[in-house]
Image 1: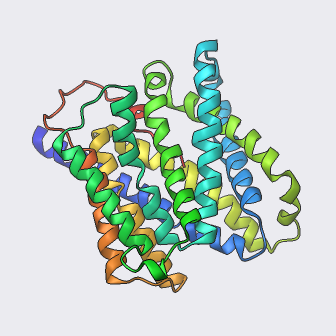
Image 2: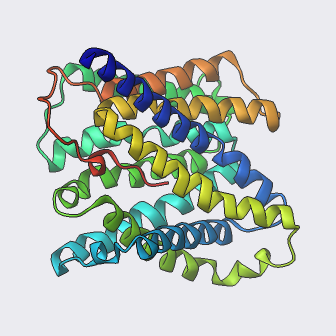
Length: 316
């Protein structure tokens, strides 16, 4: 019975994480719908960050857990730059990449994040570059080159600037795993997320001030889409991912979540008529495979009585 219960819990964890990744995979479609109505990138990301912050703050307020937001000064010194880079920088770079390229391409470039984490962990955390990690780096780089069209240099699928913004999104997203790692040992997930979203929301609002007028006079349906980007694509997806992470190891959850760029590519192909060539598919598979291998461990980590969801938390 114990083994059966464990298998059921593992399956439930996989399904929960896959559901969260599927929701995130549709984020590009949401962005394209909003862009088509003339909303600026800055206004969209500011709205999303503010909405997500308010949702999490309201949850803590009505659940009587506001006390978790009290943090020490040394932790604020880490939370503020993390909010600026991993929320403000990530949102701006990723959603700009979506605007200027295809949804699937943006998602694949974002999945360079595990490769950046491997390199940064070597520099800042002293983690070894094992053969699986080197293989993951090679697969990720090769996959990205295929997706952006390096096989036909005269007809690149993505402009160099957009490749840089997409990779920048992956880098800023990956920094959370490196810089935020010490915080997860001292602070609850909700505290980290709420503070980072709060800082990011302020930064993004400043950037959005000149174009906030693009949010006025929109169809009711677009306002519903904007609300969904905060409620569904952030709050609900985050809750699903965290619930799944309780039942899985962080590395396993990250591997399952690699379904996200697959969903993004399919959504772009079906709903946005984006081109889906065999070379792009191969490149995407290499990137997803590299992301999965980057999460593998040569030895199975020891079981802990209560895994901490914060260690694999994802911010979207």
